[in-house]
Image (cartoon, rainbow, N blue to C red; front, side):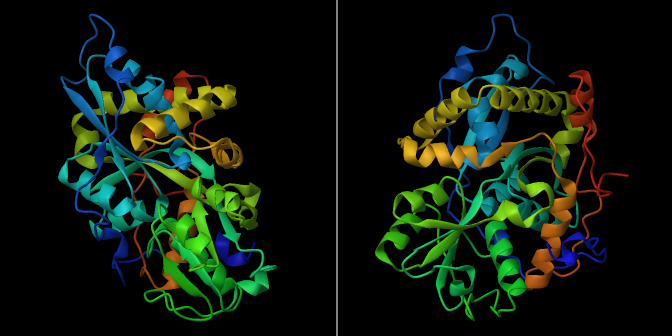
Length: 370
């Protein structure tokens, strides 16, 4: 691990060199998650929380969002929300989820660190808070073993990332820079060709040979392995203790201020879900896959699901120190300039829940609300 991974995030006036993550990846914000279990689990005589008819929850159809998948499928969120409906929306990319949060189309969301950083910086710290952690790991560099046999062979090849400026794109650009290679962040051209490709089409691009590898989250990474790819690098190996944030929980600041009981209920459900996932890994894996099938119409085969699930660690800790490092990587790659992240975290309600559960509280790395 290079020393600059531990350098403190520079503070300064929030300004963006580029805002790729705030361009919508799709025309609509997200699709409604197809699940009938939530309504069925509303207990007779249950009361609404904060007088709300519903709490709108967003997440991606990725296994790295397993807390939301399992919490939806097993009814953990609905149980804690009582007669207030857990209303789910599915997203394909961070920018569209941030836009939905800004517009009020969702209240709370599971999302990667880069879109959270960009969204917070773009709004000058006024739109969102990170209120909890969800997952670590689950990101790999998978390559065509016939074309790339070692890390040095990546130079000169075409490597896919999910989207310009997204979490994996920033991580790959940083890794490339650490090899001493040059790549223009915006165009993706240089010593390595960075090809921004939606996770849904990356396996086909890999199979056709239009890309030689990809730095991607699960289950896309394991889909590439099933197509004959080889894991050349697991991103967790680049981090202290092999931990880095891949999924956080965010909330709009207005919703947090107006409906703290509803937010606390969702956080309690998230903590309970993670506890259940870690205590029942095989059942949790099956539940996540069942929800993926409900949301997308297709379950993952075992040769993809099993290795993908194994590489993800579910945690309530937002791993705030690694968010700071990921922000540094975005600065180094030219996608951000001096992002001011003071106040991006508010872990008050999470720590309240953790204390009540007899667990250890978590730290905001000095980036919490003062």
